[in-house]
Amino acid sequence: MLKKSSRGYGLGKKGPIKIILKLMNQFFRAEIVSVHGHKMILPGKGFDEYSTLGVYGEFDTSSVENLVHEGDFVVDVGAAIGYYTLILARAVGPNGLVFALEPKIERFKILKKNIEINGYSNVILENKAILPSEIEPTFFNIKNSQGGVRLVKNSEKNDVSLEPVKIDVVDLDTYLKKYTAKNEISFIKIDVDGPELFVLKSGRSILNNKHLKILIEWDKDLSRKSDCNPDEIIDLLTENGFKIYYPDYVNKKYFIVNKDELLNIESSDTINLLCKKD
View 1 (cartoon, rainbow, N blue to C red):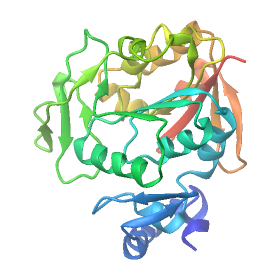
View 2 (tube, rainbow, N blue to C red):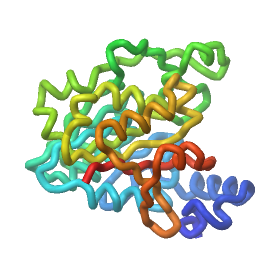
View 3 (cartoon, rainbow, N blue to C red):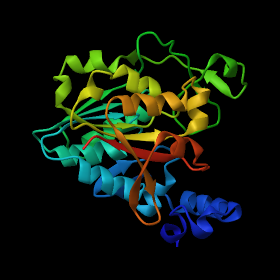
């Protein structure tokens, strides 16, 4: 019942039903679970659907598995507790490499444990956020929230629900030079709750890669709260030769969108855009 009602349409979208589903997820959760073929340790709160559904977004998950191949070098920006990091590690195999970056220390500790209990040695973990060097790292935790850290613009700093937190940051282009040539990166997943534009700008040289694919979180409101203009995200991607695809989660298909269409789509749901060149 949980699985059928939680697919983002039908009864699962109605307010009272969503509350009931959330309570059921919490009631049936476990601390160590099997999620899409991996063991995962969960934090004390949050990530309840990992326990009850056994997969986090079927369509996004299958898309990533189809896009990443044996021997690939890939990057997971905003790795949280490791759902996609584990999937990427399995997909690239022993000859590939996953760079997983998660700035929130509580999540990072669990991420590290989840990589260890599944026996992967092809993952490099970093407790850092990605930012260009010219951007001030003004990060905050949201009090009483299980979410990740947020990069918040100046006008939001007086919000009493926000708690300042010090986060180590690194420029993506500079960081990857230590490990690999930029043209070896074939896939990037970006989920950073707002400053996705800054992550893209931090990896400008990587965006030139001919066969690069990107799965990027799209939330116009969160982008603006991080001083990121959604228009610029689209412009930067298209300037580097990417076509942008919007997910139809009901029919499990993507459709191509242009800038005007994407900016005019109204949705209360956060979705992942697929960006690819070929």
